[in-house]
Amino acid sequence: MASIGYIGLGTMGRGMVANLLRAGHDVTVWNRTAERIATDAPGATAAGSIAEAVAGRDVVLVCLSDDPAVREAVLGPDGVLAHVAATTVVADMSTISPTLSDEEARAAEERGIRFLDAPVFGSKGEAAAGGLWVVVGGDTETVETVRPVLDAVAETVHHMGGHGAGARMKLVGNLVVAAQLNVLGEALALAKRAGLDLHAVLDVLHVTDFRSPIFDGVGPAVLAGDYSPSFALDLMVKDAHLIDAFAAQVGCPLPGLAPVLDNLEAAQRSGYGRENASALIKVIADRADTHLED
Image (cartoon, rainbow, N blue to C red; front, side, top):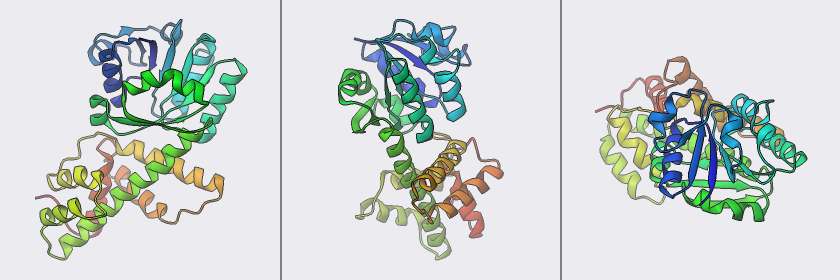
């Protein structure tokens, strides 16, 4: 079993740390809000600093909310790379810009530290169940070294290529997630305006060749008026901006992203930022002058 330093104990981190412990790994956790460690990660060792969390660890996992948090925690003067041993593998599981991910990889290489970008698909439920899908960038030998650790939190692990490939794949995938949430909202609004029974609509969406787990999970929650957060809308807005910038960087027009981002930002302005990302559907329904709840 591995000794692991875990940086960040947010919605995803709680489930991942629990599964790492369940698999028999020795886990030391640092979190900006230190008092949460005892309640959210029982069984883990609490660290008072990043330096303490990473000292002598086999693997360090980082899972933070955005680029500024990662930059400070990984690249900062008191960050992971300033204190980690050369024998440790560092894997960043955050959803961040490919530019920052590449910067992390270069900084790690300069220090002789093995580094992977390893963001995850899934949300709170998958994290708790150990059913995340991990997309990894880095060299094959390092991926195989940490695979037993990643297997503890994942349903599947996908090696996408060299450094940065995982970070890029995460944005490609989140484009699909955002588009599906948006189109589900539009479809339900159209169906409601057309006088269709929305439960019957979801029954059809469940069995067709264009069915989706997102439709199956989010659809009934929308009809129940349930927007409790598994993945906060604020984070989806952040990711949509990352996707937009990434697409511009590689010269790929994404005309379908603009209306999705418009609905997300409107939902954020309406105060739905801490609700589930599916709360953009409330904006779509309002714009269609209809209500989707039972």
